[in-house]
Structure formats: C-alpha cells, structure tokens
Length: 300
Ligand SMILES: [Zn+2]
Image (cartoon, rainbow, N blue to C red; front, top):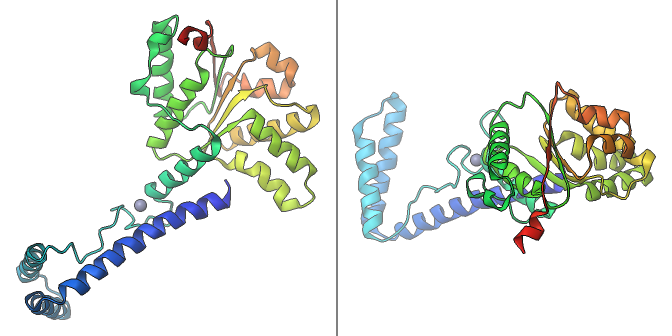
C-alpha cells in the first residue's frame, strides 16, 4: 500500500489526539481562574500523591473527582481530561501490541476508497434487488457474498463474471463496504488502473519504485480488481504481473475479488492457462457467472 496514504491516515489520528489534548488543556486553564476549582483540584492532586505513596485507593479520590466535574459543569467548562475519539488507542493509532488500531484502519480505508474512484460504497441491507430480472437468484448470491465477507476466507478468490451492466460493480461495492465494516484494509482498483502500474513498473529503472508499483497489489489485505479484461493489454507485461499478483496472494492466503465481462474460456484465450487456472482453481476460488439483461438499460 502507498506509504503516503498510511502517513496521511496517521496524521489524521494524530491531529485528533492533539485536538483532544489541547481542548483539555484549555479547559483546565480556564477552570483554574475559578478559586473553588483550583482548591478542589489541588486537594485532588494531593490525595492522589498521598495514595500512590502508600499504594492504596480509596473513595476520597473518586469523590473529589465528582466534585471537580460538578464544579466544571456549573462553570460551563468541558472536561479537563482529553476526550479521545477512540477509546481503544486514545488516538494513538496503534494498539498496545503495536498493531494498527481499527480507527487507523478506518481512516486508511476512507483514503483508499477516495483514491479508487469508487466514490460510493453501498450497504448490503440497502441493496435494491428488485432491479434484477431474477430477484431470488440475486438475493441468494448477495447472501452468499455477504456471508463470505464475514467468514475466515477459506476460499481466497472470488470471481464475479457477467456481461456489462448485470450489477457486478454494485455487488462488489456492497462487499467492500462489508469488509471495511470489519476493519479490513481494502484496496479497490480497476483492471485499467492496475495495468497502468504494470506498464510503469515495466518501464521503471529504479528497482525499489519498480517493485513498489506491484507490491501494493500483492500486499493488500483484500484486493478488488474491477473489470478484468478491459485493460489495454500488453501480453507479456499484463500476464506476467497479473500472474505474480494472483499467485503470491494465493500463497499468502490474501483474499482477491475480481469482476470480469469474460467467461472462463475467454479468460483462457485472453490471458493464458496460468491465469485461468489460478482464477478457476476449485479448491481456492468461488466463480460466479451472472446471467441477465443490462440493468442500466432496465433502470432507464
Ligand atoms: Zn484507535
């Protein structure tokens, strides 16, 4: 994933912390103008120190805290404790074991979605399935995919095929949203955008940059590739890079969701046997073909 996105997300969380702490500090400064608050606060701090010395905890501290908060309310001043947005990490972005906190993952996802061009994600519960010619089949498909999104991903590749306009993108918008709600890091891309990175990488002379253009697709926790087969294909470049990505993701058991207008035999002729066997691998893939008329036409 692009390090600039992670840095940006970290900055957002850091700003939240800064804001919460600054607000608490300014509340405290304001409250200190009040003599009653000041003396209560002094008493509270003394009591805390006294207790810490003898390693005891009594009600007295809590009582003083309550009195302090009451005084703050009567002065119409907010809390003197920082009110962090995230209770898990106190707006640090990292959990106590050093992992990304869910609040940081949510921010990274927001930035990734913005960058992907998938402006609107949709919710499974709001999916309007009566637009489809066969509503009951689509309902089953949506349920199956929602279940997969909430599973442990025993099968790591989902291929949703069907002609243009049968609702593939609609379905993956729901899936991406569902996964983001589980705080998964989701990279949404189109085959077209990915192919541009392949070409850039192929032509790049800087070894690190060359690899970075590809590793973001290999390392993404969850990767969505929309519209496979519509890219401006350059056989050697496309197939080699695409195979590398699909293969490494399979080995590392990282979920990949593909949509395509191509049928399986067309995938074989459009790419090659290595790609089609990765996609059609029965032990690892769920392949779905959506029959049907063009939803966009039906919507008109
Ligand atoms: Zn957090």
